[in-house]
Length: 72
Image 1 (spheres, rainbow, N blue to C red):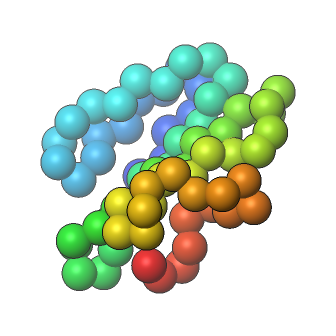
Image 2: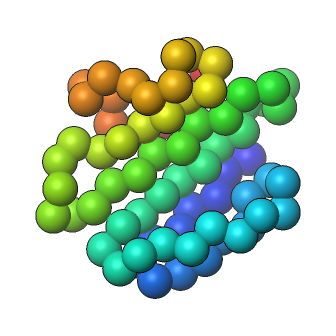
């Protein structure tokens, strides 16, 4: 299950919360298959690298991780 939101938009994530995104930013939120962990990937075309947070893998990931993994 995933939700993608880009510049100036909003998305409703699994909890029903709304996420607002500033212009130029894009985020993807993914819940794992067992619904006990999540990943949020955020990026901006003017900035590198992307920011990736994986809840069951220590939080914020190294700069070499650029997107949510297929399974985590």
